[in-house]
Length: 75
Image (tube, rainbow, N blue to C red):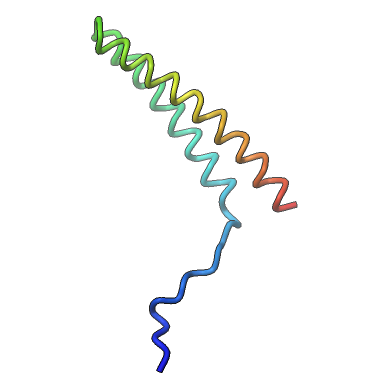
């Protein structure tokens, strides 16, 4: 007897572009929110948040490239 509850789900990439676009938007909002927070920080905490924002910006660039790739794969 085969147990079907352990079968992997099919790979559905049809909404990847939309999900990635939402992730980009959320990350941009996080950067904007952090600017308000930075106004109340100083020293090391502010530097850490600035470094985090740089990583966020790099992540956005990667997600945008992935959006392009996914879009072309869907065409």
